[in-house]
Amino acid sequence: MNNNSDPLFNQYAEMDFADAKPVAEVSAVAKLQAAQGGKSRITMRVDNATLAVFKARAEMSGGNYQTLMNEALSQFAQGQTLADVVRETIRQELHHA
Image (cartoon, rainbow, N blue to C red):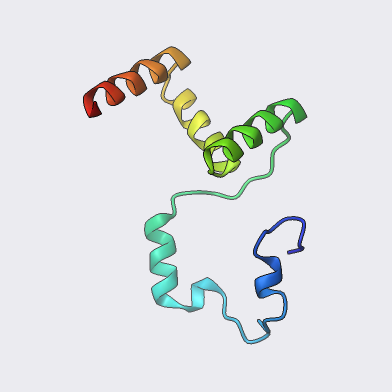
């Protein structure tokens, strides 16, 4: 971790994690991670322009670009088109109004 990749770096930079345990060795945390899990860490190459769009959208919404990319992939995998997503969003907004 470095100060370029994590905005909380300075807050935790001086902490000593030498005795830290892996998640698997802390049963409560392991259970929580398993419950929230269902995700796999992967490495993939993405066009710089595509990545820039997701990062910009995440910054505008206050979210995380990886979450946005995961949602987009999930929608694609489910066969949803952009038009489907827009229609559903409009329906939800009209229902809340």
